[in-house]
Image (cartoon, rainbow, N blue to C red; front, side, top):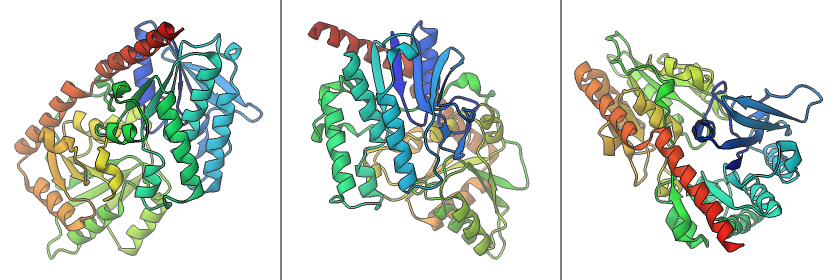
Length: 411
């Protein structure tokens, strides 16, 4: 198969962030397929242009056999109008792609929806080349904007996105969702339930060091590694740190927040206002080096806002990276699907509850090392059973081939 995969924010291992599509594409390449990932050259995590020189508008790069087509898009710094313009500009460039620039037409096009404009452009491109279109649903837009309180349901922008969303569900030959319970929402919006397939995020264990228990240390390190954004709810971590710091005999617990995002500077300033001496911030780390940093943790944090958007489940990359490192996890979220509880790999607490998070941190810090190690190993076993990249890539390969076969039978 010749596969074009459109994901505005796709990256490879030398960048910081989620590498879902690169790791899946690399497996497909190993199976003999040609995969071209079409992405923006402007790095979303660092808010910098990192792939193109001045005067360049696109570049084809091959990384471990995976072809990346980097497209120049306008810069932005926050989540305002300039970011929306960046999305629209990327979609326009995708729609304008010519097969001759990529060595011939594809057999199938997959469009991912970190936002709907990119997926819409992928669908239009597939229609032009008369090949099947596969939609990947990462977040439920525009429902996420509504549930996170950003916009009202009656906002014109939301109404426009709803029209695009319904069109994509109706036009897609197959719909891949990362969220375990999203099928109900997609069906309500016009998607065919027989064409919806769940493929969560996963881990490539070949990138990780062998699992090893943490060393005994005077300070217990709780680490968060990932985006510092609105949905990540890192305020609750700072508030939990404040509760622990203000105890009569403060425990030797340190919170280490690794990553970048639109809320990072705000979080740094809040930590200063609270006079926190048990929180440290570190920059985003490229994927090929992040596991060495994760090894320094005694346990991990995953926090999400208490929002209806998570009623469809969650599948954050960082969660399965945490589990693969065989460390306990504090899971602070309100969602019907809780992999940490299912695996017995940590402690689950309600979202938006800093006191419960602080109590969980104390419980883990005082837990015998042997019990924490066993808890972490249960998470590692869970990942090995359900979230290995080769298994997920095989499932994706079957879906793409089925879409092509269905398209051929309709001709």
